[in-house]
Amino acid sequence: MDPLSALRDYTIRGDLDKIHRVGDELRFSTHYSFPCKSETAYRSKQGNLYTLETLVFFIKNRHIKQPEYIKNATNQGIPTVTFVDRKPLLDYLEGRSSSSEAIQFVLPTSTEVEEYRPDDPQFFSSLPSNNGASILGIEEGSEVRVSEEGAAVELDVMGLIKAGERPLRDRNAVLQCRNRDFYGIYVGALRREQEKPQQRKDTNVGGNKGRPLPGEKDDGFPKAKMLKGGSKIGEGVPIILVPSASNTLITIYNVKEFLEDGVYIPTDVKMKQMKGPKPECVTVQKKFSSDKDKVMTAYEVRDKPSTLKSDDWDRVVAVFVLGKEWQFKDWPFKDHVEIFNKIIGFYMRFEDDSIESAKVVKQWNVKIISISKNKRHQDRAAALEVWGKLEEFVARSRS
Image (tube, rainbow, N blue to C red; front, side, top):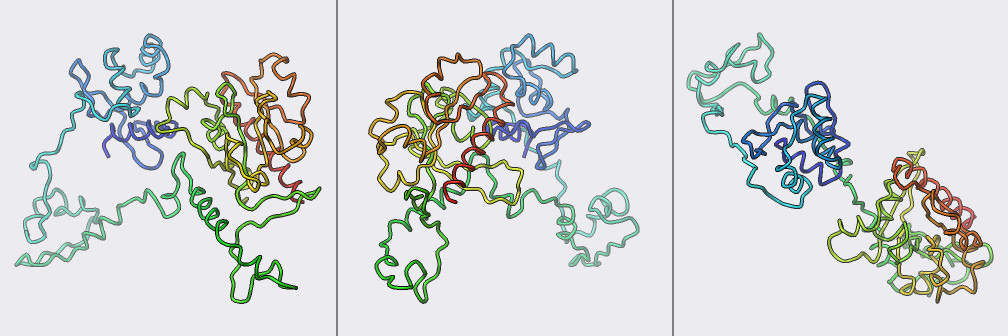
C-alpha cells in the first residue's frame, strides 16, 4: 500500500495514535513502514508533492489553527501544508471525498521492473554481485546452477520469497476490527433459540426436570436464575437502558464509545458522524480489564422502554437516568424504591455542574458519575467506575 492510502485508511479508522516515528521512519502499527521524507501522491497547488511526515504532522494537528500549526511545524523542521490545500486534503484523508484532482499516483514503467525469466540463463549474470544471488537473499558463496539449455534452475525462488515475508495478520488478529465485534452474531443466535418451542419444558417430568433429555445436548445458553425476593434474571443478554433525549450526556449514540473505549464523545458529534437511521439497539462489552483471562459479558443498550416486553424487563439490569420523573412513566414498577432495588441507576454529569442539577437524583438510590468537560483522558476512570458498580450489582443479584 502506498503512503497516502495507508494514512487515509488509518485516519478513517481513527488509528492515528498507532502511527509512530522511529528514527527516519514512520511506522503504521506493525503493518507498514515508510521513510519520513518519502513523497506521497498528493500534489500541492504550488506544484510540489507533500512528504509523508508533512501529511502525518498535519492530520495529527488538524484541530489547531493555521498560524499555530505553522509555528509548531517550523520548530520541528517539518514542511507545512498550505492554507488553500488544507480543506480538500482534510476532506480526502477523513473520507468525506473519495478522490481529488491533486492526487497523482505514479505507476512504474516497464523499464523500471526487471522480469525474472527462469528459462533465460543470462538473467543471473545480468544481476549485480555474486551472479545476482545477493539480490535474491542467497548467502555469499552459495552456488546457483543453471542448465546449459536453460530448461531448469536449481533454485527455490518461492522459498526465498516466503523466507523474507513478514506476517501482518494471524487467525486471531484478523477478527479484531475497530468499532466492530461479533457479539451481534451471538445475540442473534440466542434470540432464535428463545423463539423455538420450549420442548424441554413440556416433556420434562419427575426427577428429569431441568436436565437435558436422553440424547439431548446442553446448548450452553444462559438459564434463568433466581434473585432475592423471587424476581429473576431473564434468559438472554442483559439490557441497559439510556434516555432517548439528546440533552443528556449518555445516549444510544455515544454509549458504545464510552463503555467500550472509555472515551466520551458528545451526542451531537456522534449524530453528525453516524450514517443511516438511529440504531434501535447497541451491543456493548467491557474491553478493558486487569484480568486478561476474564470472560466479558455482552449487554444490549436500548432507549425505548415502551417496546420492552414482560420477559425483556426481567433482563434489564441498569439504567442511565435523566433526572426527570417522566422518564419512568409506564414502567412496570410502583415507585423509585422498587426500580432501583431491581435495577442499578447511573446519573452522568459534568464535574463543574451546579449541585442543583443533581438535586432530584440525590433523592434516588443511583450512582452519580462525574466527568470533565475537557479532560478526555479522565473518561476511562469514569467508565471503569460504571463497569465496577454494574458488575458488582449483577454478581450480588445472582448470588
